Length: 350
Ligand code: IPM
Ligand code: MN
Image (cartoon, rainbow, N blue to C red; front, side, top):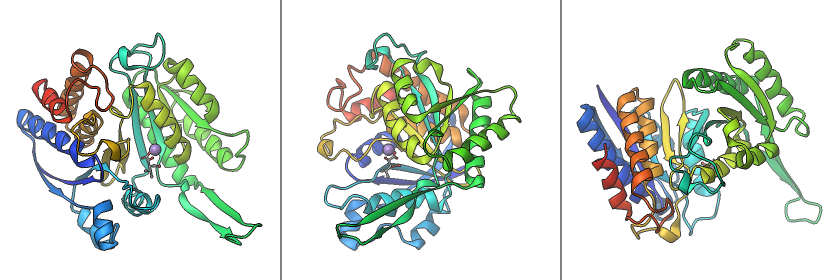
């Protein structure tokens, strides 16, 4: 089967890490006899500065022809914060209704964990972040902008349908993952009494259909505490868009840093998009020092999503091997290898 993959290298170090991801994809495809073609799209800060365009409706239409999207990073120091993020990244997530942001938090080498005495078996969970609603919906307004009595509101928008499809996905994922079979709802029922009442009620109702899954609840503030103290308590966590954004940066740190953290923006019925969860890292751009493993792991997640389970596993195994035996650090500039060399190491261990 011929797959078409849309590649958006994007800004900053995006192109450098995507190049390594594509290198690994190519080598994996040869080994597992996969057929695919790629097309590079230049959406990002440079194109915006030249043309004033983020993503046009015609761009979205063009992307509909693809099986998956592989994204590097979006964010440019010369563009005001918010323009590229909402105009490109969030626009993609929303246009393709990628309502799940799946972010595995897995430690591959205890030496790279900032937590004392935590081993790979202690840091192994997955965050299922709602990816289409909540505070990210963009609802709100200014009143009396610029005046002394200015008011700015930003609304967290939660629909029963949106919450339920996310929670259901999390239960199904937890069952399929088949590890601790425990799903934790991460929220803030003690303060955000409308939104989290809906989440809690929906969670409790859906839970009845999954008697094999143990359920738990943790407030988001407590969740950050447990991430540091007892990460081994978690298996799968389901949460809203904003909390998911925040806790997965902390999750990335306990799995070894942004250099290794990958995620998928999933539409289980449509076109999904895979990306390293870190940003465009302008200060490391063009130096061949950025860690490409997050992008490589994102390519692995893409293979899994396309049904190529063995190929996906091979990519992860190769990453684990070099993280355990070769790299001196997962941080940019301190890996003991350049960006391109790390890509080559993964290929060599496939
Ligand atoms: C992420 C990023 C994005 C988000 C930004 C760049 C819009 O932080 O993917 O976690 O907030 O979702
Ligand atoms: Mn984030």
